Image 1 (cartoon, rainbow, N blue to C red):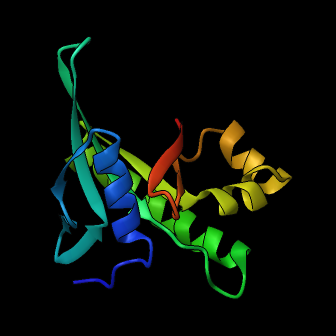
Image 2 (cartoon, rainbow, N blue to C red):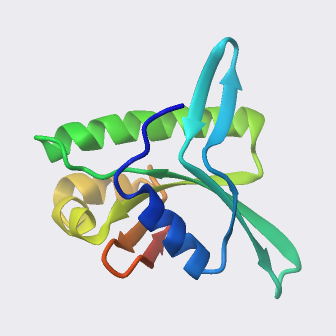
Image 3 (spheres, one colour):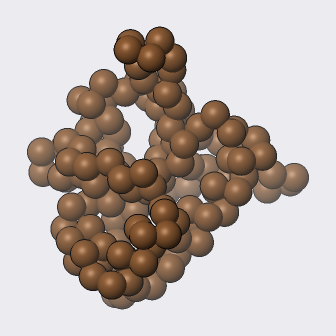
Length: 138
């Protein structure tokens, strides 16, 4: 079992407050002989559309010595999981959860804007102190 990110429980609480039901903590994936674990999986009934929305969330703290290295590692993990989801769990949408301060430092600058413009990532921006989701970026 992998070590949980320091903001794991914060994001879990934020999702619950936002009306999501946590279904897996973590979500286990099997690819050949390899086991992978996505931090959280959740579902939400969309009353207006009478359907269920399913997501998976990878939580990243960005507390390493280099935010760019953290970004490269998070991006690589996100892309790997996304490729696996397309084959195994196509009904689930993958999100990367990051703190609002990380979003402001990285994604309002050119490097992050490139990723957002190309729709490389889907993000959940959260406030760790209030344990709330501030923004969804798809």
